[in-house]
Length: 500
Image (cartoon, rainbow, N blue to C red; front, side, top):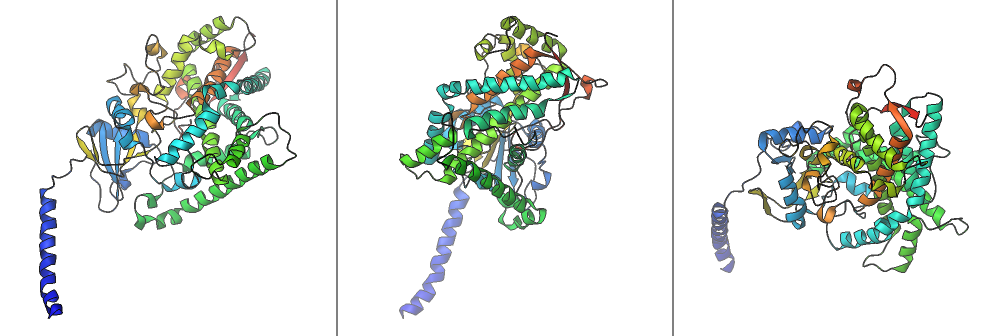
């Protein structure tokens, strides 16, 4: 009897529950999603996405749909913000709603499942590992302590260019600056210079280029579990795994070398510090070798890439704009007063030089799309509903070229920053090159120190010209695909020693 009653009543209960659920859904107001191009079933806007130059693709959409653009990649909602006002909303006002990171395949694998600073999701672990790195590696005091290494490496850089200058050889500036930046990072992080015996295209350099490309490498599985087979078909999965194994082997060699009791060292480098912290067990988590490798990855990539790319872009713009080049060189040489080189104390006296650096970051931000964010909870942005787990891009490249913010936005005019309080240290969202809020780049200070010292000494020590037969119009601004915006084609210049 009870069984019969259950059989009769169960469908009625099911129908009542179904009706109630439908009623609740009908009562919920529809979401007001950000405007954007229409997509296709299952793949959304993936067929329209330009993976080679996403910042330019998004900027074009912004001209049609406004400062907040909505897309769908497979099954994943994506939002792109492209105005200073909306950047401030995401990076400051609602920072806590937008400060996490998604688990994207390339970033996740190369960061040892998010054990680093840059790509780990927001939470207690992020706060603790960020504090560890700032205290031990990125504080003003620590950045200052690396100054002797910076000055030695700048001297090496100038000597290399002087040799090329004396024989009238063309200077591949990007290659030499990569050597300078990576030598700095190798010395403070690993205790050795990796270029010495292996040439400019050392293992360090080749790994670096591959890593920064795969951080933003496109994987279909990130956007739909049903499309993951395409990553295997295209070879993207095997490429990532091969790179991870090469990186892991590289880190293992470094750590084994530091664990050798017979190793000779002048002072502790970053690996030494991390190994000592590992033995202290003073964290809420156990600091393992994977943690150490993940932190090294951040230092390895960010510490080398940004300063190299920005110095090349600055020199390119100055060579294309001879009046600006002459003005900044006159300022530097007046301050230097015939000293052998520019010191870090001199940099604070260089107003126009600082404006050149800011203008370079405006036109050519190292990361045109800040490292991707993920919304933590449902919220609104510019009146639009943003769902949890939405991928959020901040297009600082588009903001830097916004005609509502900048007069003649496509022109290189350092003068626009003379007398201006706008800076890139996280408070002015017209120039948020390093991000802001909880996720601001913790290595900003050390990156700027490398960039400014090298650039000032290049401008002080040499007069720069294009090789014979080349005109300024021949210099292109094509970029390599990657998390950092490197110039695709090398910047080749002729250096003439000053004073001659």
